[in-house]
Image 1 (cartoon, rainbow, N blue to C red):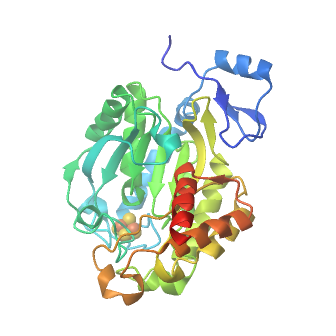
Image 2: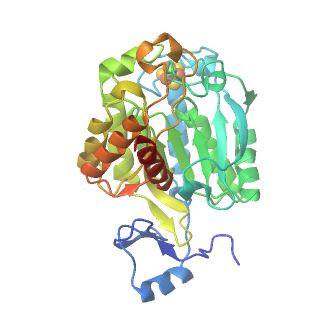
Length: 361
Ligand code: SF4
C-alpha cells in the first residue's frame, strides 16, 4: 500500500462535526461522519499540508522569506535585530545553526500525539522566553545540545518517520523556525509524510506564524500567563507582552488549522492543542485562560490543563511559586474550564481531576 494512503477511517475525537475536503486531503471538522462518507474517506489519500505548499511552488519562497529574518532577527517578540547569519546572537543565544538536544519517539505527550508508536520529538536547545520556573532549564537556558545543519535536521525527521512516529514534534522551535522549515522541505523531498507539530511556549509573533500557514499541521502552544505583570515577573528578561503576543498567535494558529482533527485511531492529523500549566496561587490566571479560549478560539478547542508543576531552576526564589500545586488549585482550574464550556479536555487531565477530587474528600 502506498505510504500516502490513508489506512484508517477518519474521525473527530470530540464527536460532532462536518467533513471538509482541503486541497486533496480529507479532514473531519466537527462531527461524526455518515457511514458512506467514512467508506469514501478510506479510499481517499491524506497528505500533510506542506505537500500542497510544495505543489503550489510557495514552499521555497517561504523559506527564503524566513531566512531573511535571521539577518536582522525579529523572529520573536524580543526583536533583538542581530545578524545571526553573521555570527551575532540575541536574547535566545541561538547561533545561525540549529542546536538539538535529542530526537526520539516520546510517549509522555498528549494521547492524540503519542498513539502506539510515540510522537517523533526533536528538542531544540535555547529558548526565546526563559521562564524562572523552566522545567527543562539545562536545555532551554544552558543551551546543552549539538550544533547541526539543516540537512542533519531533515535526516532526524526521516529517522523518526522510519521508527514509526506519528508526527514530527518540534519542541521550542521559535528561534530556529527558518532552519526548521528548510529541513522539512528537504525531508519531504526524501519522503517525509507526517504531520508537523509546532510545540511552542506561545511567545510568538503572529506575523511569523503566518509564514507557517500550510507547513504546520498541528499547533501545540502553551498559554502560560494571562496577566502581563505575572509574565514579566516569572521570566528572566521581561516579557510583559507575553499574554498579548500569545493570544494574537493562538488566534492565527486557530485560523490556519482550526480545532483538532484525528484519524479513526484517535491520532492527531491537524488542529490546535493548547496547554496550560497550573501553578500555585493562581499566578497563571486559569479562569481567565479557560474563558479566553472558549470566547476567542472555540469551545471545542483541545485543551490540556496540566497538574505537573515542579519547583525547578529559580522558582524556589519566589515564595508564591516555591511549592507544588494543591489538589484544590487543580480542581478549580478544571471546573473553570467546564464552566467556560470547553468540550474537548485532555483525557489525562480528566483522570487527574478525579484523583485530585478524591484527595480533597
Ligand atoms: S529569535 Fe532569538 S535573536 Fe531572534 S528576536 Fe528572538 S530572542 Fe532575539
